[in-house]
Every structure is written in C-alpha cells, then in structure tokens.
Amino acid sequence: MKHYLTDTHSHIYSEEFDNDRRDVVFNAHKAGVKKILLPNIDSTTVDAMMDLCKKYPHHIFPMMGLHPTSVEDDFETEIQKVEEWLDKEKFYAIGEIGIDLHWDKTFLEEQILAFEKQIDLALKFDLPIVIHARDSFDEIFEVLDRKNTASLRGVFHSFTGTLEQAHKIISDYHFYLGINGIVTFKKSHLPEVLKEIDVKYILLETDAPYLAPEPKRGKRNESSYMFYTARKVADIYGLDVKAISEITTQNALNLFNFPNDED
Image 1 (tube, one colour):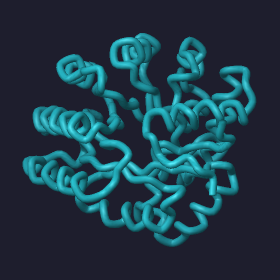
Image 2 (cartoon, helix red, strand yellow; image 1 turned 45 degrees about the horizontal axis):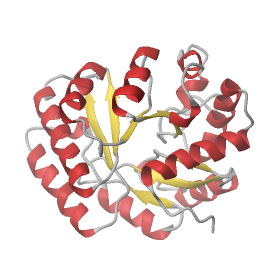
Image 3 (cartoon, rainbow, N blue to C red; image 1 turned 135 degrees about the vertical axis):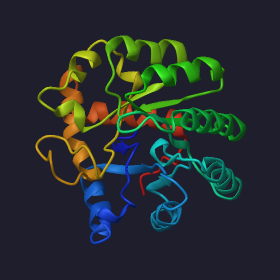
C-alpha cells in the first residue's frame, strides 16, 4: 500500500504559478503529495501542461479534454484537437469535461454535445472521465443515463452535491467523488454527506489555484495544501491521515492507472 497523497485535480501549469512552479512541486512532495494529475482546459493550455508533465514524468500526469466553459460555437474544432492529442500522447483521463451553467447558459446545447463527444472518446481510448458539474447535476445525469455503459468510469470532480446525488453517482454510474478544500469550509454540508458514503468512493484533489482549504482559504491554492483536506476527511471517517492517504491513493490508482512508484 502506498503511503502518499495523490492530488487528482490540479492546474499548477496555469499562469498563476509561473513565478514559483518548481517550488510548488517541491512543496507538494514535501507535504506527502507525490502524485498530481493535471486536467486540461482547451487547446491554449496543452503546451504548458505537457511541458510540466515532461519535467516530472514520475510525479505529474496529464489529462486531455475541453472544459465546458471553453465550449463555444467552434467546439467541434476543439474536440478534433483533443482527439489529435489523444492519438499522439499518453493521457490518463478525458478531462475536465462536463456542463457548467453557473455564469452562462448560452452554449448549453453545445456543452451537452461536447460532453457526449468526449464520453465517446473516453470509450474509444478506454480512459476514465473527469466531470466538471457546476449548477448542472440534472443535465449531466441525463447525458450519463443515455451514454452509460459498463466500461464508462470516472469521477465527479469538486463534488458539492447532496447525499441523494452522491448515492446516484455511486449506485447508477459507479463513479468516484472528488473532494477538495470545500469540505473544510465552515458552512460546507459535505462532512454530513461523506459520513454516509463509503471512503472507497472518495478521491482527494485541490483544484489549484482555486478553492484553497482552511486555514489557507482566500489564498492561491496549491497541491501541498491538500494535506488540510486529507486531515479533515480523516476526521470525518475517524481515521488517521496515513490511512486516508493509502485509501484515496489506491482509489486514484484504480481509476487512473498512473505509475505508482515513489521515486
């Protein structure tokens, strides 16, 4: 069993880290976060993401996908670029993909189509999907109900839903729940939800540079801060951080199948 934490969702290739990215990777390792998975946003972010993964090939692993907030009229072109990258490089998931209705519903139809096409790519390339669901659980469930197969697998990243939604995700789709700093917020309902969910369905993540946990809330998030989330989740389950590290890293390995050496 591996005694390290795995950040299953971190954007440390983004410009917020241009001045200290090397330190951020070092700090993560020092904090016990030894594996980091990077979700893509769109064609403008691929090069930075791939450069970082090639610098740390044993520790940092890429996903490929088109983020729902980047879906516009030209989404077909973007999806084509996603498939081109999948054909030529090794990726560990299709992500992050999904539907986001928080700010704008203008491209809802296009978001649904882009989501469906990327699920098809996940099935074609036998990869898990990483779902971004913001104010859109019902719409995402409708797509998954249409597209669900025994081989479709994945995670609802940054899960903030209800217990009922969590049960549906686990029982209907056998997906994981991605838990980040939100679980540490004082008004978060997630601790009550997680008490009713088996820890074998939990993945840990940061969503850096966003959603820093208490006591770092309001600051730029980074992968090393995932320790605070792990400590909170350990408290919820009545376990120690070492046990949570082992369980959630094994869950991540089961889903993403990344190299699990600790060198």
